[in-house]
Image (cartoon, rainbow, N blue to C red; front, side, top):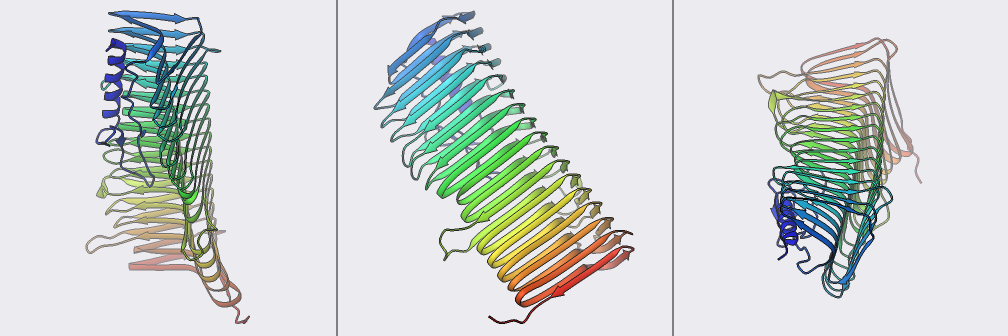
Length: 620
């Protein structure tokens, strides 16, 4: 076996085996990551260790110590089965730079594997693709599996890939699986992996019916794994009927990870009748992760008659901190029988804090025929602090229509959710909004629920708080069934809950035939024997709840507070309004302020509180 092949095979096998601590390996050595933070998650469904043992290479060089290659000639490797364009390997250091056009094409009836450019070394490797240069890998087959890798840098110490030209990978199989990787960096189990993109990266995978298609434009692994995208990275995966499609524009795996996007990241997945998952920016750091976006991020997943999951940005700092900063645009769109769309997912599962800072625009849209779930921003800390600071715009929309009219439709939408699971009094959960948060959920027949924001400390003694100087709105619609909406829901389990509102909080809902429950602000601070808790509300602006029905029973509540002790101050100039209306017949119940306290309720009103209920007794 050639040294190049042996080294690449060993590195790739290690990369998959160690790509995320605690993951399991499937029968084909493909790692499978358990689903977290309300979204499906799976590692590339492909065995990257299948590296062309008999590949024809147009330019392969091996050195004992160090090697430097500056390629200025076009390379075209076109063979059945396996193809390898340019490769350079050294036991210590390899420096490979491409100034020309490299193409590797493998095709045939069986398995097909194509690698266009490789830079690999025992300690330090650099692979560069300059402006106006191209690296293209194509793998096409009929009955076998197809694997295409455009540019690949590998080392046990430091691996760097810098692309300023074009690097693409295209894999297609009529009846088998297909996997495409435009740029891959492997920094070793104890090394550094760095991918810099100032050009164009594109990965396209197409698989047959019932098969798997996986496309990743930029993939980096290392103890420290980083991706810097200043231009364009696009992944497109499409599977046949009943298949599985997975697309990621940028993915980093390691102990400490970071992805910084200043350009465009796009992920598209389609699998009719099967499952489709598109994640534009995907970072997993076992000891911490940071994700930054000042560009444009788009994720779209379509699975007509199947399951679709779209995530714009996913940041996991598994054991320690998870951090997200967005000053650009993030959009996630899912279409399927069951559709899930998340603009941002940020989570830590052990000893870290989870922080999301948004000054840009985030949008999550889920369109289903049976179920739809849309969440603009989801921020989770299991033990310590979870914090969302928003000065931009966050919108979530979940719509269910069509489909089998005998099934119960479910649509749920949350603008922004900050959540803390455990930890007792070790941390708190908070949301600070000076922008806009909105959620909309709609069904034809069934259950529709929308929350403008949710701030929840789910386990004892953690505090929950919200400071709003912007706008928060939620709307739920059901032609027939049940519609529930809450502008802002703030709750703590045996802990203090604090809300300061200087802006607008509005909940609204409509039901044609059925029930509607609408609340502008809902605050809960539960108590336990021997433990007191205080629910504090200070309102200087507007809180509203509006419920409308055609022939229905509707409940509209302006503000609700539940706790051991309630301290509610509606200041001068502030306004709380509740309306409940039926257009044809039914019941309408409006409550402006509702409070329930175990040991005390203190409500001071220097502003305006209004409740209006209007019901009709008309018959058809």
